[in-house]
Structures are given as structure tokens and as C-alpha cells.
Amino acid sequence: MAFTVAYATDNNYVQHVAVSLFSLFSNYCKNEKIIVFILGNKLSRDNAEKLQQVAKDFGHNVNIVDISDIEELLPVGVDVANLSISTYCRLFLAELLPTSVNEVLYLDCDTLVGDNITEISDYVKSDDWYIAGVEDTMYPHMKRGIGLGTKDLYINAGVLYINLKRWRSDNVIKLFIEFIKSFNGSVPHLDQGVINGVFQTGKIKLPLRYNVQSPIYAIHRYSDLIDYFSLSSFYSPKEVKEAKLKPCIIHFTSFFVERPWFSFCLHPFRSQYRRFLKNTPFANIPLKTNGISMTSKIKDLAFKYFQPFYLILKRR
Image 1 (cartoon, rainbow, N blue to C red):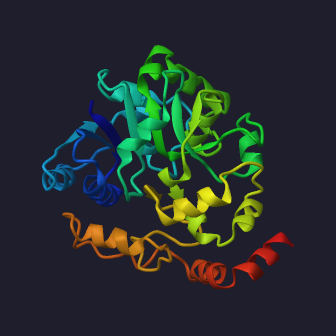
Image 2: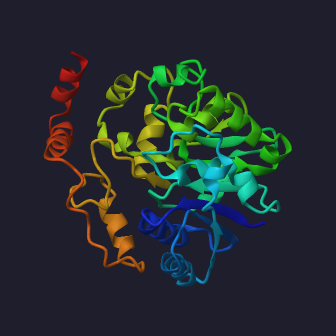
């Protein structure tokens, strides 16, 4: 049985999809067939061909799905002014992908695969689930804002293993739209808030190594991680340590380390991203030198090198 992966991008993020694709094909199990869909929002022909080239270098191909009209699927009033509309397309994967695809691993553009991802399917043992993901470091008030309790599971939407078969049979798209309307189009944390608010049950918690976000690397001590986000439930210290040492999927969120396509970046996997970039058709794109203020750089450096003092000041 083939393992299916999906990305969503526009021309602004296509470079990062190329890097993630390269890392995916570099690490997948050669004995398993892998199918990749890329949902492209007004993606140029040149960029689509470059993504195909990454796949061809590994003897594969990718399926480009045009989602230029994705905004028409969203209810009136959804706030899309300050983000890529592509972020919402994961809500419509059951309609956008062929009905022959029963399960799919959705990956954000800013991810890097460091191990065989096909083993993720081992964590779902029945059909009685909607979605699987990694528990997020989410503040309690953000959970309450979408109707969850502070100890309820809230997953990060950057890496999602989705039961499309059940999404279709239960018509979850209707539930998504009703939920968005109940917030007048402004759901906290956008589509991630929608997914967690609608699926208050039927969520499976994956091991942390399948979506290791920047706070896991930026915050040095486990107790400080729990305290910083006021977490009442999370992974154990052992699970966090193991995820740091052997991540399967690295998710480049910006939290005090910035992202590796900026010249200023403190993330421990920045070199791996840049090395993979050199093996893609986007190799000649230089690192961004602007976009991060001097104030942000100073805060990032202070957080890394003077973290105990920084956290003491934050608590005051």
C-alpha cells in the first residue's frame, strides 16, 4: 500500500517545499511506495517544474493540484488578509485529493524530514479516529478560546496524519465551516484552531519526534518549557530529550531561533536545511538578510545565552 504525503504552497514558500521534499525522499523507506501531492495556489509553471525536478532526481514524481480557487470554499468573512490562503487548504483535503486516498500525512512547507516517516501509520490501529498529531505547546487561554479544557489534547497542525475516509463519511467539511462561522471568520490560530475545536474527540497523540518545533530546542530546561507555556499536560522529560536527539520531522517555527532561510538563525538544524537547499533547483537563492529587526536579534541571543535571567524577568 502506498504512503501518501501532501503539501500546500504558493510561490512565496515553494523553496521550502523543495527542501522538505528533498529531505523526505532522502529518508523514506525504499521498500514502500510513496505518493506526493502538492496543492499549489497560483503556483507558476517554472516553480512547479522545479518541484518535479526534485522528485525526478530520486526517481519519483509529484502530483500538482491547482487550488487557486480555494478561497471560494471558505465561508464569507474569514480573515485571510495577513496570511497565505494555502494554510486553510488542509481543511479541504478530503475534497481536494482523490477519493482513493484514505489516509494522508500533511506537512507544512517549513518542515525537514530526518527519518522514515511511513512508520507514523503504526500509531493508528483502528478506523475510529479523525486525526493524529503532536501535542502543541499551547497556552491554556488559547485552548479555552476554542472550547477545550486546559488538559485537553491540542495538536499542532503543521504535521497531521489524517483519516480522509472518515472525514468524507462524516462530512467534516460542514463541521469546519459551521465552526468558522461561529467565530465570525476569526478563529484563534486559524485552521489549527478549527481542527482542534471540531475534533475534541477522535484525536491521536503522536510521539513528539514527529513534529519537533523550535521551543523544544530553544528552551534548555524541561521545567522552564512547562512553566513558559503554563502546560498542565505534555510529554515526559525523557520523550522531549529523545525527540531532540532523534527527530523524525523538524518544524521550523520562529520561536527565539528564527528560520534557516534567514542569514541570522540560531536553530541547530539550520545547516542541514541549507545543505539540502544546495541540492535543489533553488540553490542559488541567497539567504535573507533583512526581515529580522535588531531588537529581535538581541532578544534571541539573550534568550539563548542568558536564558535563566531572561525567564526570571519574564515572570515579573
